Length: 335
Length: 294
Image (cartoon, rainbow over all chains, first blue to last red; front, side, top):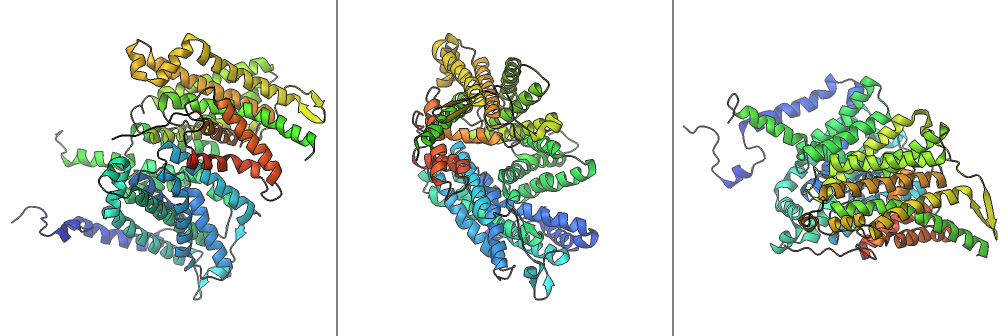
């Protein structure tokens, strides 16, 4: 009798759920997230929804930065593009749930355009281009899209089939469903040919083009995909909040997204983004409400975390967890 | 367009160009030794601006304030070289960008925390005289800001151009291995470059504070100065003046020409120029083109 799990076909080897443990934890995890709102109060549900929204944005940035290696500081503005698209569509009578993918598409188109400089530029030049794009989009929001500092979406626009989707359980399950779909898609992007091409471009774009990868196409796709996630996150943000204003989509938001990716684990798109969003978003809001911390403390803690992880722990929290796992694999022996 | 309006715009552009050049040179000095961008530079300017604001609110003389600000900036530069840049040697340029973004946040947090009630800002009054030359109003703060910035710019460019220390720093920027081979203390000279960059950021912050007032968003000017640095080329020293001039003239005249159609264009012009430069001529006027081989 074989000890352990053996794979006898390529399909088995490529399956997402390869071990009995995976299947058991998937079932347990699904049951947990499905029943979570029963355990949490209404504050907890709001927190969970916000966490999932920022997780989606971070997931998108992790595809761009972690998988394809293109640093971007415009994720906040792209989330804004999605949010304003969804808000205006909802105000013009489009079903608010149908507006979610549309917002993603508009953000993806914007992200594709913003990604065009990446055909010629890389590294710090690209970072500067994205800062410039972020500033220009902020200007567009401030001047034309949202000149009154805030767009309110009335309650009636979020009613679909008699159910109000802006709060409580309907909101939670909508955001959860979108997140599960997004995670599934991201997993498949990561392990498909496109994902491997992105990793090749990240590691060395010149050698990637030598082995026949269309570098420009891969970069453009990475930007479009990452921005699609940001746009979806923006649309869900509209769903979860009674009104939106451009202050939520500034360079600070983009930096926070980058912090989530870097602290969580760049390149580990699902778990890295989730850990990052948990640490930066939820961890911070819990800490802030517990300690009554102010903006100064937020900047110092967040900045310190970014610098610490980049300098000393480039693999992020995922890397730390992996080391812990390795340690316990052989425990109590040292090697 | 009446002549005095043109003259006012030219005056404003000239003052701003020196201010942009000073702060932008800080980006360049770091780029020369580390081949990446120091995004904590705006944070240094912000912290230095508030340090100057609080010090002068406590009645310190202007000269003393300038010395305190320079020392703060220099020390912050050295600290960041030791804490961030040196451990990241050999890593990708993006790592330095990300880490200095973290440092930017820390500096901003420290500025908020340390300034307390002063955080809402105000104006730094250095000279209260107002001159009028043919309809062009030149305020004391214009002159003071120009003097601070020009002194800092002259000092650093002068050191780079005319002293043996400057030659050594240029050698390290050009080729650190070669410089080490000739016995130059590469690590100390790199740290010194960061120190000068910090000094320039701090004095630039002081100059912007004198010119435009101390506000929580004054670090935005320094981010815009990145465009000047890019226009001139990231590894030039003297060329930075041209970058500053081009940027400030585009900003002032563009804003004047377009403010009816694009309100607040002056605030975003720098970033539009930045994007255009990156698309058309990413190495700037004087920068060295980077060629990559496998």
